[in-house]
Length: 147
Image (cartoon, rainbow, N blue to C red; front, top):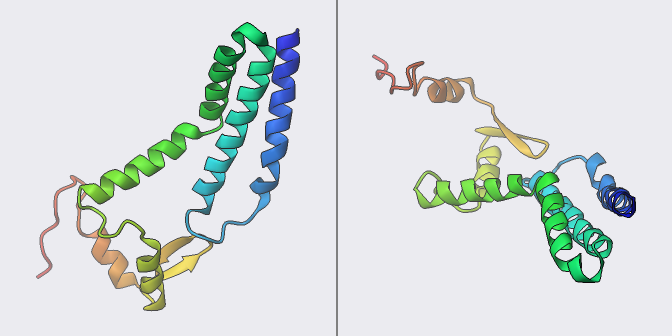
């Protein structure tokens, strides 16, 4: 019963701390992943604290660590790790020219190749969009060059 009370207290407290960020409109690049990372950190720390208090003196550290990591994973911590791992892999394997793509994408938006919509970008020119779409056929092979 005491564990259930601490669990309920921890979830109410952690979700109460992060609920204000859910309603904000994303207007800067990477704002969503930054908010998710912050929320995961808050949920993990609160879960660690509540789990440590609920576990007592002898088991507090182990139970707190288990509950804290569980809260961090449950709230999306793995998604944050995968996001940054994917960005690192793309950059180090040569698929991205820059580590920070925001200045490049803003440059493209200034030249009217892209249009900034909220925190994302969309392709404006139909010819550019068709060119990118024609690079690969359905069998994932490069398409023949136009005649």
